[in-house]
Image (cartoon, rainbow, N blue to C red):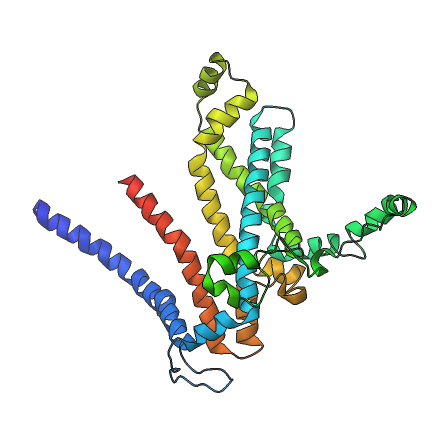
Length: 332
């Protein structure tokens, strides 16, 4: 009979043997490719001809990319889209979850209806919302059909005919504030603010992901015991006060997890923006993923494309890694 130590040694080595193929494939096809992409971003590979010689200085590709007005616009759009998208999706998803938390007839139907957009691909969502926000055939057409524009014209006002995804205007510009707070802010070649054309894209993304947020919150609400609500009612709290002061604060872990997932989605968004508006007027809706696609497959600027992809990876890691560390520590 083998001793306990021998059995323990055998079980440990058995698990290692099982894991070795997966670890090897992960090391090659994930971390190996990441390392290869990082190396390409440091080279002179700027044409179809392969040139793997290192640039001098070695970080010049990143310096060139950060100085490009288009990439600066991409960074601005990523920040603006992320804030709008996460705020709107969480607010709408929480609102829908609170509505469905109340028992009423047809609750199952509405839950499925609200969750349905999440089953669609971003390409389908982008095509549909592009039509909705089309200045010729979308919402503007309903302004004409409903007589709203005729009424405004009768009052001597301009008709409602916004350009939606074709409007290059940037509102709430903060360039002067950035230049005052950060010396390097004066070197920005684009306007930092909220591009009007990016707002419809955030609305479309919110429409698709709000059902997912709702499902996350419904799971959290189901885990709250009825005694918690009963205790709040005994203390004199009304329905709204119970949600605001008791239930919503208890959903904080769900909110954090949902925000992290949505942030990951927003950082790598591509297909929705590509199908809905592309780079937009004056790069108003351009995002890093589209920049990578065009640099790699249109402009053949392989060092720039891989450099942008490394920046996207680093941005994701800055969010995901601390969250994973916190999660693992909380389980110990």
